[in-house]
Structures are given as structure tokens and as C-alpha cells.
Image 1 (tube, rainbow over the protein chains, first blue to last red):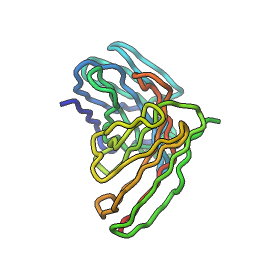
Image 2 (image 1 turned 90 degrees about the vertical axis):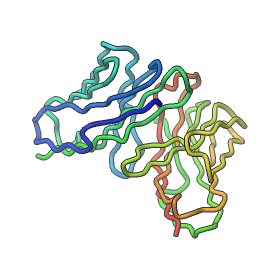
Image 3 (image 1 turned 45 degrees about the vertical axis):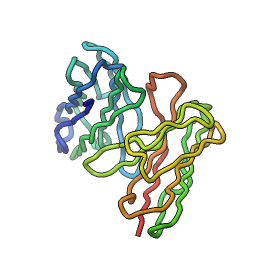
Image 4 (image 1 turned 180 degrees about the vertical axis):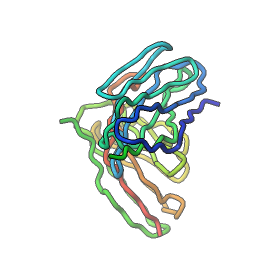
Length: 110
Length: 114
């Protein structure tokens, strides 16, 4: 069964303390892996799409990487405004919908 | 600025009531989606639509129906609301094609069924 897990469930960082969020997936043929950011009381906001192992994408302090089994969202020198829930999602070739993981709640303390 | 809007941010209904959640997008997108989001469970797909008058069941369609009479509007209907349908409901849209790529989400409707 295709599924997505994320770890840790919650992460608390000091401002400037770099870290990584993990997204592990099981899918029969990956069409795409997506990262979204969700602020409290709002809908998710798209960050990145990764298509194949070895691919990397960057946006400001965020860098997403992809292997055949997992993706990492690296956060370099985070700021309080990076506090949010980060969602990972995958789409496989065998179906035409996206499966979301439960998310990682990130808090960056000044 | 592209936008997906949902008719209500907060809604309180009674058990057994028929509930309509409306979603409108201004990006001329073919694909539209309804999800519910619950703590620890993530986003779960209820229904999606590729085009006007088209609809496909997602992972949890029981107790829900949808309507897409116009390209820009996708409605979610709870035929007889129950307390286990208390949740955050999120609508999304995306450009055409089987590879959905980026989905644009609305702000969500927090529905409470008493």
C-alpha cells in the first residue's frame, strides 16, 4: 500500500539552528514528491516538486532533496517566520491522486 | 494574485442537516479537489474533478457528494451531517494534466457538527 510518513512529528529549534525534516514514502513508481508549508488557520502553500532521486530544489533557507525512499527538507539558519507545519505528499504512476503525510510542526524560537 | 476561495471560514451545523461547502477558483484550472484535515491523519482526499460535470471518488467519499456545474466552482455536500464529519475542509485546484504538480489551496472551512 502506498503511504507517506514524516518525522519528527514536532521540532523545536532555536533561531539559527539548522536541521532537517524527513519524509519517507512507499509508492509503486514515483511520479512526483511535493513539499507544502501550512500556517495555522490557512491552507497549504506549495514549496517544491521533486521528480527523481538525486534532485535538489532550493528556496531561501529551505532545500529539498530526494532519494529513492525518502526526501529531506533542510532548513538552514531558520528564523521565527519559518515556524509552520511542513507537509510532504507523493503521487505515484499507478494512481491519479496525491497522498499527503501527517506533517511536521516546526517552531523556531527567537 | 491567483486565488481559491471557500464560502465560509467557520460553520456550525446540527446532526442530520444537509451542508453545502462551496469553493471557487479564478485560475481557469481544470482539476479541483476536496480534502479533510484531521490532527494526526493529515489531508485525506474526499472527491476530485477533472472537468465540468466530472467527479471521481477519493479515499473517503462515504457520506459526501460533490457537484461541478461550472469550471470555477466545486461544491462539497454533506447529505446528512454527523459528528464524525467535524473537521477542517480544504479545497484545492491545479492546472490540467495527470501530473498535478502544484495544488493551490483555499483557506479552509472549519466545520463543527453538534
